[in-house]
Length: 443
Image (tube, rainbow, N blue to C red; front, side, top):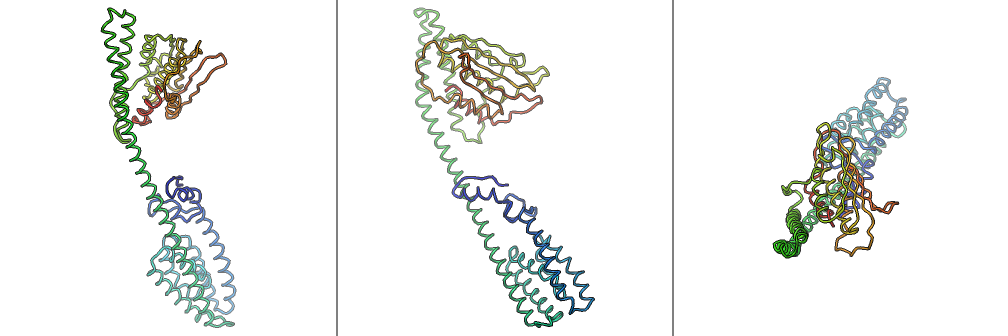
């Protein structure tokens, strides 16, 4: 089945996904390889109805003409006419061959008359006009011969010839109309797919242009501001003899954080300027073993953080030596990072508890809780997209994320991530992870 897609002809493409089973097999799925056409639901229904109709009409024609025909011809009508009905099953694959094979049988067989009309219709729909003309001429010749070989005692051969001309002419007209309609459907499908491809190309160009513009603005504005912070913090740290050891230590933390922020900024700019198919930066990614350093960094900044973890979560390696997937390790690190950042921004001075447990086959359960602030903190600038980015990251890792205020008044951020019991590679694209790191990491 073809999935619904948007675009200039999105309505038509979306409609096709819901009715492809009721289209002819050659129109149902454009991705079907040539020569491997599958019968649609419509094809099965049409084939069954045609078999029943041909059998009923053939029996009536045979019974009506059996009285005036020799006994040997009546038996031959059944022997050769029934295979003509069965051959309709393969009419879509070999319409011309089967139509030509039934021409000599049509000279004496009443049962083959209706299957012959169906074969003419199929040739009109699926083959060239030259082939159709050859088949029509031969079938007309067989009909004329039948009128003289097995004449109707009541109407005569002339009437039989006129009826044959009308039936064959109507069948050819109907087949050509169906052929034109199917060609129109195929042309509309081609136009829809080309329009969608052009739309996707324009969107990709616009997206790349916007990414480049954002990268330029970030470089010009944020780079300058963070550089000034690092410069002043370095000067304050240098004058530690006058500022005091505590101020000097805080200045060192500020300078290191500013330096790290500049590195992150350069990396984000590189990701924004890179295309989706480009390789991501080679900077090492955080793992489960880096979480204690993250917690210690927050403690040095003055936060009260209690950290506990299981053995597997502390090392990133299970008891059987199975290493945590890179995607799970990065996601866990970012969850803890976002939880600490939110506590520092929205509940300064409160105690924070970080718990990371789990292992292979069980999954990783990470929880960050903090007490509510004693006073309403001053609002800090931010995009408010931190938890949104975490939700996207956890979804990519096939995990679950919950956050909110609990009954005891604490804010709780909890996530569960799968840690397979067998070795598995990082399933998500590295570039996509890079973008989510900086879009939703510390808003």
